[in-house]
Length: 168
Image 1 (cartoon, rainbow, N blue to C red):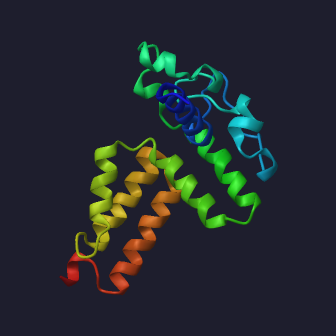
Image 2: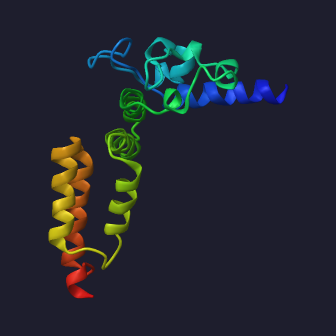
């Protein structure tokens, strides 16, 4: 197998496992999948498109190399992560399913802000109130309800264990 063939195979595997549907060809919200549909890229490729709506079968190395596909065409879309979470749920991997749903929510949050939030969650970096404000921001600005709940839990537990900035 040539390097180009290997790279093309890798791109397809990444897209199959982490890409998603767009508004034009996205799976409807009532699409449900289970472990019988896994791997989605092989068994349900019609559900997989890039974040910009390009179907999986059109994501080729040639298009990457000739510039037809850009980085944003290969970005993760929340709908595929939701489908992957459903697969995880179907085999009893509930915690993994929740992690995939949090990841889907964080796609809307700019990378720099994700890093700021990560640092704010470290011990003694934020007050309980600052963490609650982050949770409110996640919920209201980005509709990231699952992530917001996680940050609220961290604020409560951090304060209870005296690991917030108030106790530094």
